[in-house]
Amino acid sequence: MKALVTGGAGFIGSNIVESLLEQGAEVTVLDDLSSGHKKNISDLITAKHVRFVQGDVRDASAVRDAMQGADTVFHLAASVGNKRSIDHPEIDSDINVSGTLRVLEAARDLGVEKVVSSSSAGIYGELKTIPIDESHPIEPLTPYGVSKLYTEKQTLAFAHTYGFEAICLRYFNVYGPNQRFDAYGNVIPIFVFRALQQLPIIIFGDGKQTRDFVHVADVVQANIAAAKNRGVSGAFNIASGTQIEILDLAKRINHYLPEPVAIEFGPTRMGDVLHSLANVQAAQASFGFNPVKRIDTGLPEYVAWAQKDFENSKG
Image 1: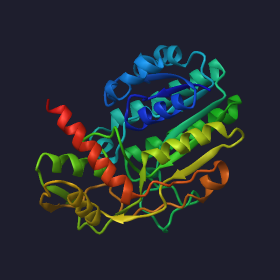
Image 2: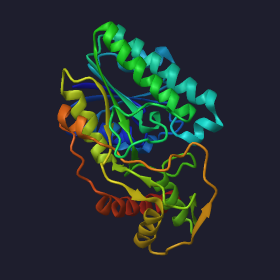
Image 3: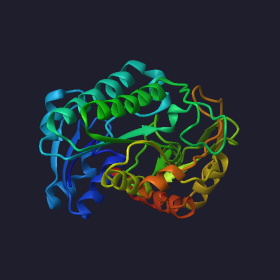
Image 4: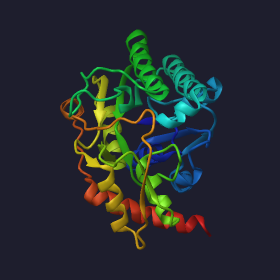
């Protein structure tokens, strides 16, 4: 496989790059380093000869340069998060809509065989049934959900119109190594990195809301399986198929830390859904997706990784 990973210096992208290299693929990374970290892949660039192109996914020439020779594209470059999109809707739309269009145009013109595009459970909006499958009504509540829905629809439309394969993966709450603190990011790194600074964990709402957390190792597995299974297209949930209350999550994080911190509560945030739990049977049946990393093992491993990264960042 000759693969391009857009956003390949980011959290999920860097994990995909590492796994692709372990399987013998030739890999190019396109990343503008606005949210990704080159240190996520610096060892891979040196030891595994990853080709790195620093550029913006909205820059057609940079995208085409990075995509030369690729037969498979993993499109992860994006502005991510409901809160970020509420605060900066124009940036969210520009990166997710215009950037995706540049990737798809290049894939069409350069003869790419398959595009695996990263989507989000944010497209569903407030859940009407639990667990949720891909037939659930799509009613996004935030600009982010809308832009990721565009990513899906445009990706599948391009594939149908121009004759390449495409698959869209709807991530639920992903966590794991290389995921650092971002005020707009996932709740797990926010909780963990605040606690490492001896700041209180702040829960927005009463903590009874639930989330389906999926480890990045399972997300990597899904991306590569989706790419390798030719003839499979469409949009699929990628999650653990389990749920946990946010208050329970905070208590578990405290348990894994050397020094527990206070847990405090704030007002409910606009755009946050109350409950989240995915049905992943479609992905299992279509390309063999099988989530195996449960939070009982994944969370303490992540806390240990975050502690090491936090200490390294101080000095």
